[in-house]
Image 1: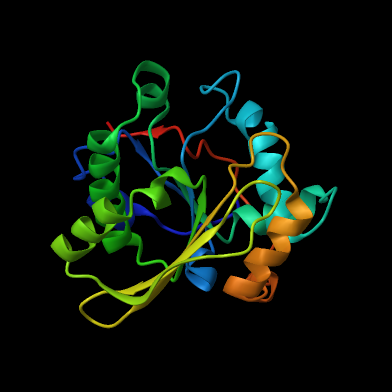
Image 2: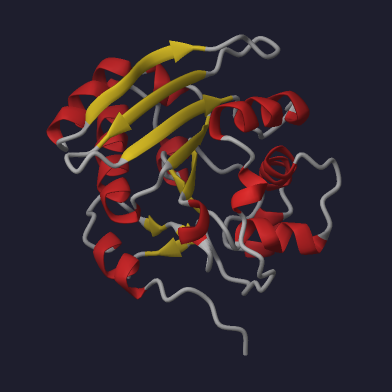
Length: 226
């Protein structure tokens, strides 16, 4: 049987986050990249089916943009998912049943910092720009969690009709984390342009990927807290 990263330390701490209804996916080689994918929502026909989720437009576009490949092989896909972490900024049920407002985003930013305090990513790639639009809420939550700004939010050149945003922050121990907000890749997604932007802002992510291609299939964004 293939062996994966023991996530028990992460899981036990993540389960203490009251607002976190499902546990993040954590690849077996996440520590090699410390890249956390933060999706504003997940759009699939069947959220109970892990294979359906991975094969959805959303996940295919994530793979294309990070690998800079139009048709990644199964080996490349395994390579990618073994090396990153992923979680939903806005739970599926919240998105489905409620209109998003500042109160919702304040709660989600608070949860984000609780997750980040445990996973300690160096890079956070946001799929969706709405969270970045709530900058005052972000700043308030940042200060509450003893983080500070290293580089103020800046607006980058538009891609299509979307304007990406970039922020750099650090925790009280001066560990840095870069946040990049891009278009949500659920449809009409120019993956080549966005992929080049990610490469420019985060460096060549592929060079950080681990040499091992081992992968264990699991349910990732639907790892519900028990």
